[in-house]
Each structure stands twice: as C-alpha cells, then as structure tokens.
Length: 71
Image (spheres, rainbow, N blue to C red):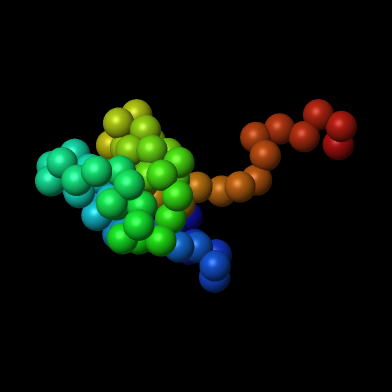
C-alpha cells in the first residue's frame, strides 16, 4: 500500500531520506526532525522499521487491525 493519506508528512521517498541522513550522513535526530517538520519520535520510528525490515519497512502499511475479536 503506497498511498499515504492526504495529511501524511512522510512518504516512502522522504522516509528513505530520513534513514539516509541518520545512518549514512550521521546527522542528528533533532536536525532531521526539524528539517522534515516531524517529531524525533517519528524519526526513531522509521529508523526502527528500516532496521527491522529494510527498505520494505519504509512503505506505507494498512492501519486496519490484524484481528477484530468482538466482531
């Protein structure tokens, strides 16, 4: 699913830039967050997803629950 909602600040391309600046260019998390207008927590989230799943972790995922036990 590569269709972010209309208010999304990051796209897969921007997420790849975030990872590149953090890992390869060694920029500070604070500077990256400020540059892209996102929180530090969001930067850490995308770094964690990249470390866990590589480039595939930067793609948009469905927000649909995995299970609906009461349904």
